[in-house]
Image (cartoon, rainbow, N blue to C red; front, side, top):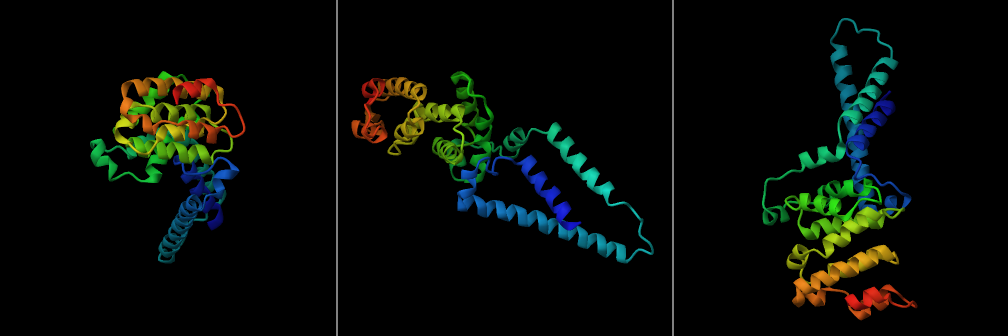
Length: 250
């Protein structure tokens, strides 16, 4: 009985907080993530054992215990899990739980990786056809909750862990990396260079990056050192011709 209910409790954790759980095989290779997930599994199993211990303790003091079929509690628990998943949006729940009415400066000292990962998780459920305007609106909504650096780090972590590249999330990272707010608050981090690495060989992403870099350099000419140099482009395209659009942006 304990393993069955422990499995149900773990399913609850997965259904209500899906972001920390890897979706691909590559995600299970990160030791830091596995440590957190192992802790979650252990906590759920410990909770089940505790509940059974309390129940047995109460039953020991009763003159008689009701003879209930085992399938009843199991079916009830599984039905509750399904209904809860249908009624509650886990990503919206994460936004509510993690809401902090604080300024970006105050939030910078309080965020952690898991919280940031939960907040960027919705980007990885978006279809590839999501327009840039919708992505920018979502990024703007996250501004009170995450610093630009934390947002970009969380997006990059998840992108690198995914087996199947998420086009919408990669575009979101490029949009954020080339935003004036990022240029002002992430000086020296060279976020556009990371965006170049995330874009890879995808011509649509490279075109978006080149367009955004052109605008950024016009608005922030002194931050040109944070943008990809010719050497960065050569490293990004080893043994291949550098796309003309990126040459113009460098």
